[in-house]
Length: 233
Image (cartoon, rainbow, N blue to C red; front, side):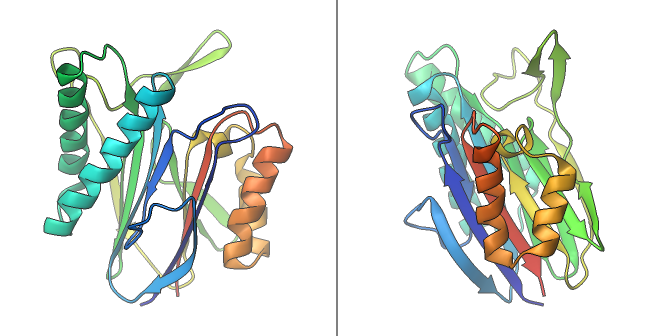
């Protein structure tokens, strides 16, 4: 089983800085665009959407990225829920040491190994499966509508004394030709599921990521937008 993967991230049309981060195998340079690569082993991918002011949100997402890299290098088959809890612990530790009152990040992590896919998330960054002309959200949004605003009910960067973080987890079988999309809400707030399905189904693999980003920008580009695509073949 081969796994192709690709990622692109952009600050959007409104924000000055990009507080999103993504995790791919062997992305040591942390480039904003990673061209299509392949592996014939397992792959763990992730998207982190930072929040809490420009520098704080960027730092929270960066901590999430770095903690994931370190843990996964030592324990590539680690429990994804425990990984997310460890990320939260390290963000809270950084906040305490630097007297920061508020910072945080979402997290959505996907791992493919053999014929299984695992997804774990906190917040509203999403994971989708796209197969057989159908799109299915695998992650669970931790968010609620308050008036005209959408407010997160969970995110990383909350001490245990204030809230016990409860990551959502699911797993299932993978078959050849399954495609998976991880993304921050900069995409899903601008592009609906039907449009995502149409683009991924009707474009070449790497072109689909660029077209999804272009569609988000065309529709306003109000937030940082990160797209990670992978396909089993």
